[in-house]
Length: 166
Image 1 (spheres, helix red, strand yellow):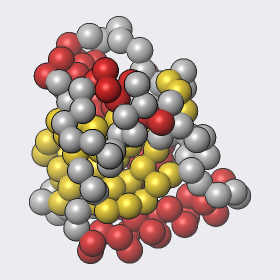
Image 2 (tube, helix red, strand yellow):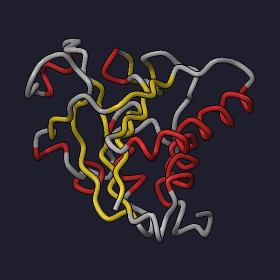
Image 3 (cartoon, helix red, strand yellow):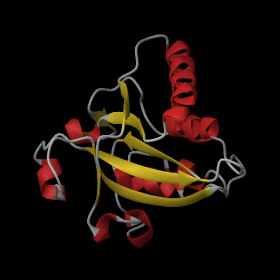
Image 4 (tube, one colour):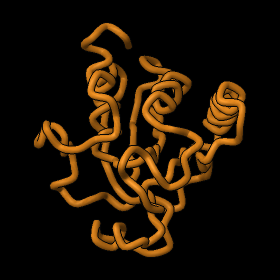
C-alpha cells in the first residue's frame, strides 16, 4: 500500500474523482502543509496556509503511482497559482505531497513530463508531507452526499471509469 497526498483545488471533487479507480483503497479529505495544528475549515478559508488535500491510499499492484499522477494532472490546471475553477485562495493551491521518499522519482518524472507538455513552469508544489489534518466529517465524500455540489472538475471525469475511459 502506498499513499499520496494531492492538493488540487477543492478537495470534494478530487476525492470523488479518485474514489472511482480500482486499486484506490481509501481516500480522505483534509488540510495539509500548513503552519498551525488542527485547523478548522473556517481557519483554512481564512488563509491559515493549509492546502485542501485528498489522501489517496492505493495498492500499487493494482494501480501504479504513475497512473495516479496521470489522473491527478487531468483534474487540475497545473499552471494556475492558488486557483482552480471558481475556487481561489492559498487553500486551493496545487501540490503533490508524499511520506515515502521512494515515490519522489516517480513524482519528479510525472512533473517533468507535464511541464514539458505545457511548455512552461508548473505551479504545483512537490514536497514531503509536513502535516495532514482530517477535515470535518461533513466534507468526507461530500459529492456523494450532495451530488449537485459545486466542483471545478468536469462531470464526465467523475465517471471516467464508468464511461470506459479509465
